[in-house]
Amino acid sequence: MPINVLDQEIVSRIAAGEVVERPASVVKELVENSLDAGVSQISIEVRGGGVSLIRVMDNGSGISSGEAELAFDRYATSKIGSLDDLESILSLGFRGEALPSIAAVAEVDLVTCAAGESVGTYLGLRDGVVDRESQGRSQGTTVTVRNLFRKVPARLKFLKSRATENSHIANIVTRYALAFPEVKFTLFIDGRATVTTPGSGQLIDGVIAVYGSEVAQNMLEIEEGRWGEGGMTASPPLVTGMVGSPAISRSSRDYLSLFVNRRWINSRLLAWAVEEAYHGIIRQGKHPVAIINIALSPKEVDINIHPTKTEVKFQNEHAVFSAVQKAVRQALIKLTPVPSIEEVATAYETPSALKQRFQPLVERAGGLAPSPPVAPQTLVVALPALRILGQLSSSYIIAEGPDGLYLIDQHAAHERILFERIGEQRSRQEIEVQGLLEPATFEVSPQQEEVLRSHCKDLAEFGFSIEPFGERTFLVRAVPALLSGKDWAGMVRELSDSVAGEGDWVEKIAISIACHSAVKAGQVLTDDEMRELVRQLEQAAIPHTCPHGRPTMIHLGLGQLRKEFGRR
Ligand code: ADP
Ligand code: MG
Image (cartoon, rainbow, N blue to C red; front, side):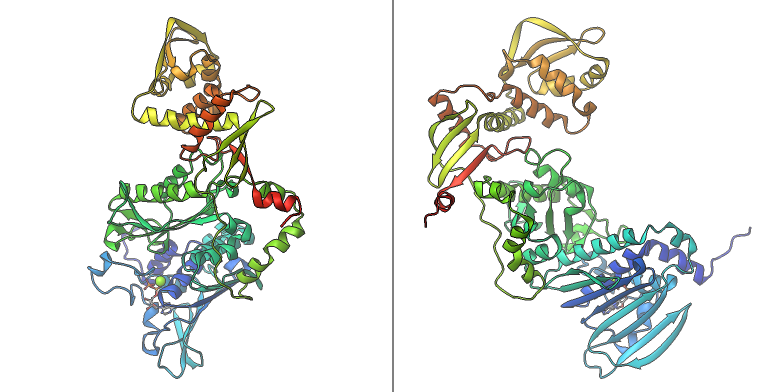
């Protein structure tokens, strides 16, 4: 075939393919346009998985009657005007591609009315033909998209089930509802109200509306601050948002929302920064609930990477990573609460009792009963000074604090203390090592051998001197001092078995050493030993959970005691 310049229709169709991948992309672009138009309300309606109908209605600025057609021209935008503007984008849109792309793959109706206009404008776009009329409408814009991809059967074929497309749509709306708590969102899927936010401006209200009050009660606000290299610094980025306690961690990553200058983005790097901050307090395979807003100078971030505008590039990736990690970590230290007897009791409440407890909050989410925003539940910041009362069942330390009784799991608590100490010593390269009087050999299985061979160096960082010594045998000359006299060979074998070398080995080794060298349950402790253990726990950064994420203690408050005994 000779070389042809493609005609306009094919060009539009190809370009549209990049912006409009599936129905949720249409919803995303239309919602972004509404948000850019300074709305306080957005109502979204979809039918048939978004293929039959998508309608987005807002009360924003509207498009003036003279510009309505222009909005559907490719690269027509009111958001940037010059090359310089491209470097300082704070709007969600800027490429001028969404409306023409959508019109290239669907039937589109626009009804819009700008401020100061007495009557609105209707445009109907079908197969490149534009129909225009005047139509009454209050200020704002409604875009209706019908029969998406009818002319692009290949796309239609690749769409997933209706339920899947609906869930992508709900996901998009949920994220933007969290990013813009001052906007009242409603999403109707096949006539059913799926998302309804009050638009109160409080993030916590958005969280209640989309995740429910139980999650909301376990969220804590990130202290607003510019988390630079050495903690708070005067320079950007600014990190705000909320993080969830380990108690509400999820088995999927979908509950982590990242926003850069209020744009929802995908970033494996930042997701990792958040997960890193949870290391040691969340169980393996679990993921946190968190909403992270990063505000930084638009010059520091490039959003013009991909037509869908969900990938970004930071000028100083490292600074953003560390700011996010520090902000989350700082909030988490406050968040990891001592589980109280009350919480344990809650677990046994009947669902209806629970529902009753949360009823007022649920009502607020629906916007029925406006009331002042609730602060998330008070969370214990640090451990108070404790007085030892005794040991229970050779496993638990009973202690008294100013606010009631503490039951401390001696093994879990000691694990936490040692885990933090090992981490510190390793980072300062000051691990205490115990040389063996005579080098020892030990045998492993072929599978263990593979894993162990590739991790001798990691183990060395923790004080092991270990090297291959013939077939399936290793020679050990030294071990971490903490493990001297303990079953270190068992520990190394166990470690080599754990998910065949996957995951963060450095952390695994630290946890494993902590676990194998900590006092065991069933071990009688003297008063002095218990006092010392509790003293060290008081100084731990995260005293309330062991490195596996389990609680180290249970707290029975005085108020709770009085309630249990029926006193006021
Ligand atoms: P972009 O958002 O990148 O500018 P779009 O194709 O999405 O490009 O929209 C083109 C233009 O139409 C926008 O720049 C804006 O001026 C106008 N527009 C689109 N949707 C709305 C809306 N809901 N309210 C007000 N103006 C809108
Ligand atoms: Mg747009």
